[in-house]
Amino acid sequence: MSIHFTVSGLTRNLIHSLGLDHEWWPKALTPEQKLLVECYLAGQIPESAWNDYVFEMPELARHVNVRRGHH
Image 1 (spheres, rainbow, N blue to C red):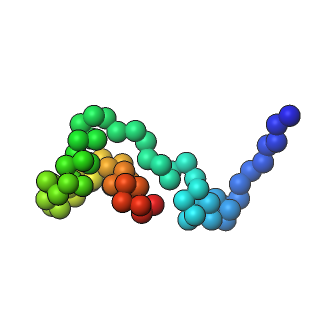
Image 2 (cartoon, rainbow, N blue to C red):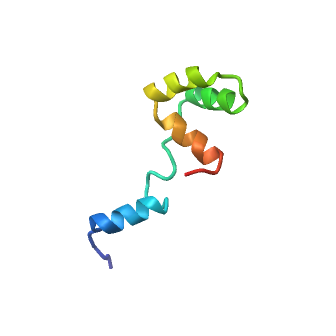
């Protein structure tokens, strides 16, 4: 048995604000991207350079936020 339903915009926003949607955990990174995240978290990448990386690859910021416990 399957149940089908639609999620209204309001409910979708609530789910998103609670961090329960599929965007909560970011997509997998390549080995190079993982290395960038590790180096940034270790303080080896200056903030200005990190901002350039995040501009090109926004998923990097999501991974850092999850690692730091911020969704």
